[in-house]
Image (tube, rainbow over all chains, first blue to last red; front, side, top):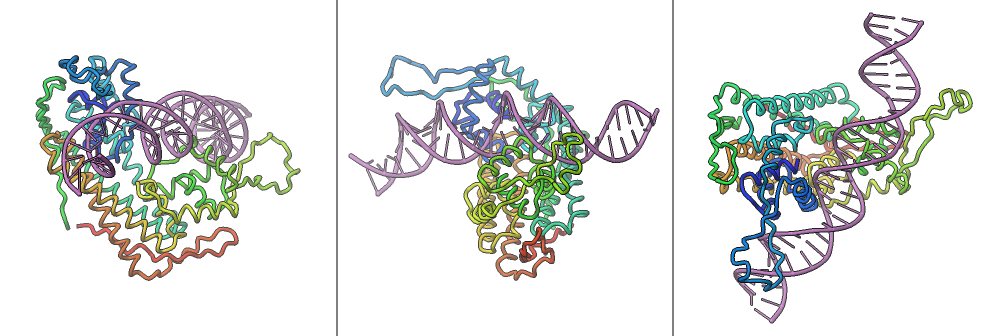
Length: 212
Length: 212
DNA sequence: CGTGCGATGTATCGGTTCGATACATCGCGG
DNA sequence: CCGCGATGTATCGAACCGATACATCGCACG
């Protein structure tokens, strides 16, 4: 999962670890708290070993100018390679079971702008199915096993059930939007380098929060 | 976290691993998918080594009766020890930072029936604070960094923000209930074996889901 | 009658991720 | 001048997951 997220971010711009973590937090803030360095750095090394990303020495412009003033351990900027882009495309398109858990779905969704419509649809539907299953499980417990559980546990289940129902509705909207909604084919060719990514995917919005 | 959950469940009844996993899934189904055996069994061994739980041979009633019919690797039933109960009380009362993340809060909440009111209040407020922080983070992104992000990412943030706001409201209700709410004692005695722990939490319910 | 399949049950292995910690630089305000 | 918070790289142990292996039981289906 982290691998996919890193590849995705580096496709938008080259970055060093610290920056990567910040962007990751911004992009996935709705899903997970904050990525740990204990995961980030080892993963970076793994990706580098696999040849999917490469180090780019930090602005060695006039490298001699400030040679070893403080023997500065310069920031290590990572850049995605051609193989890395292939790997990203492959990861983003193939959906395993882990694609539908909370984190996996979040990461995939965060890169929907770089995902083709068929895959988007497939993932949204898979996610919906998974949430529906969880929802049924909670309904079962609240129905059949209610008397076995204390009031607090029941309240927790109710809250969870509510969240499930809400997410299913959200997904329904997105799916409908995706199906009928003509995907204006996000102009993004998915290329790295240029930047200038003012994406405009099929405005997934339109889902509003009605206050009763 | 798993440690706390196991200790809590075994306090209600002695169980073997498989059963423990099922109960865990039922009790925490709203929080997390399902605990893996790769976590469960090692943890059980750890707890046993620490002296907090003990093996109880499966119904050796008439042990000779069916000696080694199939050399059955009998189910291993675990029972909580006195030290284990102390450990549970200690874990449930002390709230570290991990108490307020999704899983940690869920586990603590699931055992609120065995938690004193002051601690319940402390945990609910800590959780609220944490969610409020996450909410502010999301608002920031949606406000200041909106143009940097594509429509899908923004939609994800909106959905997350909505969930945060909803959870804060839920927590507010629970807190108010906890503060003023006198405990009408949910009828469930929930006792295991002898134990006379008919806890009576202040029926956290009363929080209703109004359908617009 | 058997045979296969799903539920029950215990267990391990490799790999990912977390949380804490360490250490160094930079810029800013007191 | 000094401390302190932001920036930045890095590692270690422990927790946890997902896949897998293996064995028993009961029952439905041919």
